[in-house]
Length: 251
Image (cartoon, rainbow, N blue to C red):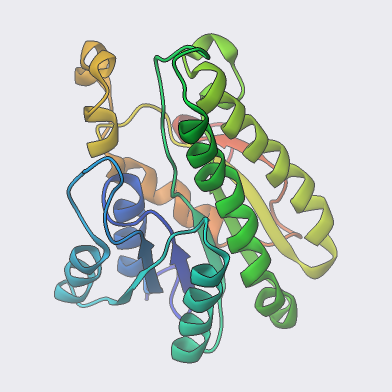
């Protein structure tokens, strides 16, 4: 029996890369997975939620695809409604959907770019958390995993004014939310995955310098499973690094 047998998980940004890897790992561990992402990538990257759900089903897992722009309140509400109608509960939410604008100065970043990044990286988690919390509260437990970044904690990492600021905002949102929902036994943690070989990072020219030492998204799976199994009595309000999993946390 898998570690997540009987649990229902929502994974956003699951059309490719890290989100797809986490969704597939959850399904391997027995979870029923709602695979969410926008129908088309605004940057033209390949991959869609139907492919991810199809991979899970082909491997004998349970998943269904939901097209959802996490920055759109109506779409988020409809996505959560579909999950509850289908499975009757929501145990885990992974906020992985994100937009990355790197290497551009404040004068080069347009207001439209700024608004899109803040909409996806901060408004999205706000909307998804807000939508799933009533179900988690009624269940008396739940786990929210927000995908953070070292660039949100260290201004020297090259994230720039937009990406670093949006991830720093997500970090503080998560830590504050953890305190707010502690009384309902809901865990909220931030997972910093480290440098990965994903479709998104492949599109960034300077990542080619360290491509060889980057990890495949699949390495994040076990740490994401560990966080999914937590509640407020076990492990909450933490910003953790995937590279330290099994060393300084998750023991």
